[in-house]
Image 1 (cartoon, rainbow, N blue to C red):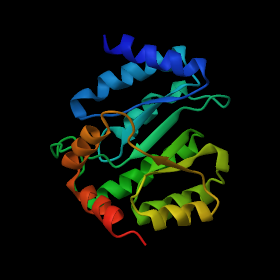
Image 2 (image 1 turned 180 degrees about the vertical axis):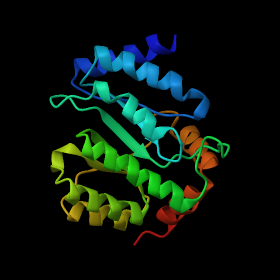
Image 3 (image 1 turned 90 degrees about the horizontal axis):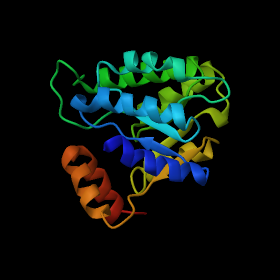
Length: 203
């Protein structure tokens, strides 16, 4: 049922030349989501992407495991973020620096193998680390993008754009936008303070 539902969405998007990214949920769903992505990618190679969470200890192996889908003419398209779900230490890194280190390790592998990443972070050290990797591998601007939430760290977003990098801004939209946003804040209370500052302290 899940596959049929998302296939209908991706098929409609493909009719209009649009793109759908399969989001990543908690650790219990990872295998099923990767399987789902493989099926969609096979049928809609230019219209399907996937999200990876760098705090998951398995992420680099998962990216490597999908390398057979990557081609020069149609590179796989991944959104790389830190991850926000509460997970046990057996499956996820817990320390800030550990997570950041593995984010950049995952990103380096993506660049090195000429995949397309959406670099989804509001963390300045990760943005700066991405700059270094982009320079190291001489990555063309059309082979990556940065991604941030609307209203969060606007000055950092502005600086990324001013340096000539592409930026995608995420905006919750639709009748369920409030429920979605509330759920995301519950999953990641640290983000709540950033959003509150963005709402009430705009310059």
